[in-house]
Length: 437
Image (cartoon, rainbow, N blue to C red; front, side, top):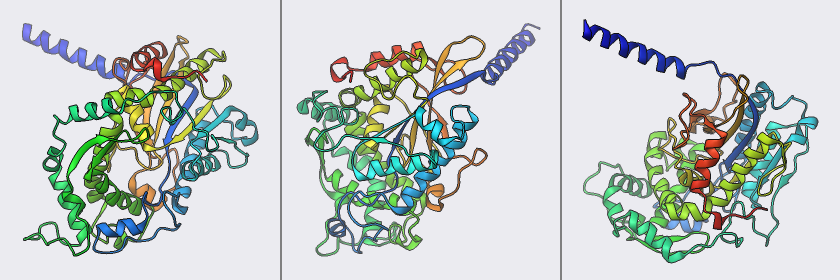
């Protein structure tokens, strides 16, 4: 009998936990901050460099030059903006009257053509009938929100940066070559055009550089790229075009010269994410490089809840939608600072996909008046990017709720009370790496 009562008690507790996670959401969206990455672009180094890594020439994109937003990349950004137009209208934040809504929307982006162009394309989808101002810093001025070190807001100790990354690798960076041997082998087979299971492995073509065997080391970098990872940097240059080729819709024969499908790109992307993780998620580096962004986002959420103007924010107290567009390095560092993780189909964990967005929703309970913060990661899947798939509320992009450690205890959406979100963020933020402009 006692065993039966125990089983019944466990069942009741299980049902209670399930029901509490499934409670009707009585919150209303008051403000959202969308922190996103630029769209699909051309490679970060010219083809003249890339071609030294491969037996065949790299394919050309729809636009020329280095790190430029592609035509399809801009289209996908507009598609994503259009999705948010639908979602924000349903949430009651936008009305569908673009000229009126524009007064409550704030855009800020780094000033490069790639990222400013991404913001413009996104705005064209969100508010197609309005003229939107994209706030940027004009060179030589540096935006402290996206680059606090070069802007003089944060001080980076380059020796500490090397030590911090070396410490994560047990002082032996070359161990990554064995840890990621399957990925490096796949990279080599794609670059030199042979089957992965071919034996013996073909020799390196004459006059070509085999990036898969270059020594990996961690040495002093620059204020922009804190450490130099030796041969791992060349691996990144060589593989970076593959995901962009697929996402941009290039013919299958041009995606890794016909040797890579979506699954292969996912595997190779692990190497790309590895380098980003080391350079920007390493705790010391995340704290120095991302505290200013985190501080501005947190203070903006408080400003949105109180309606009182504050320094060190983005937008104004009346800004219902704040869109910040930067690079994957900005997003990776920010996620590392607050220990945010996500995973979505077709991507390795914590991938900052082209056009992907970290969303911070400020919501208010209609029953208690309490403000909560709901964090999610939103991105088009690789196939949605490749096919330029229209997005709707019934056919949305991929969305992952994001858990905020020390804060998310509420429900299946991992909501935090605003008070707890502020507390956790303040603990993570380095006050010496923050300005209040």
